[in-house]
Amino acid sequence: MNTFAVKNWEEAIVSGTDGGPRVAHAHATFGYNGLIEGESVLDYLLYYAGEGYDGEGTTAAGFERFEGSVDGRKGSFVIKHDCGFDAKGFASTFVVVAGSGTGELAGITGTGTTTGALGEPTMSYTLDYSL
Image (cartoon, rainbow, N blue to C red; front, side):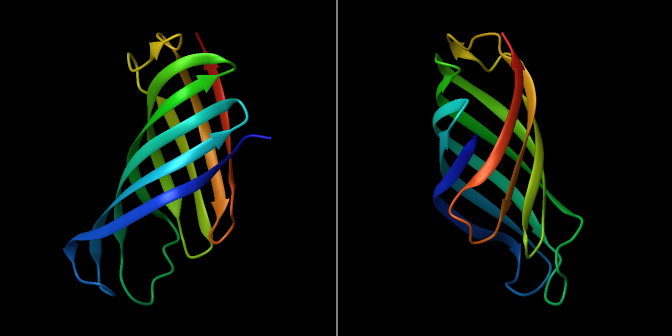
């Protein structure tokens, strides 16, 4: 099974006020197991509509840089996320950023998904790639 877990999440309001419409920046680190083994650093730009809004239909853009291995091949690469989230959890689709692969992952291309429920210790991912 392909899973990942949040190791650290730091979030700060960039514009607006807590409880009102606002933009926030999140900086996180994750640990990956399965097809991808290693760690990543992620930065999201998040929009919250404000108090009384459950977030359904809200999206966030983000970039994540992995270091470790994919199917035993060592290196790093960057993905671009389009993430939807609400009070229950999140789901994202992503694409590997062209030219971002290093080491044995140089030239990697691909797409994938992430999903998770808030409060769960691990979340799941998919990755369809080619080298």
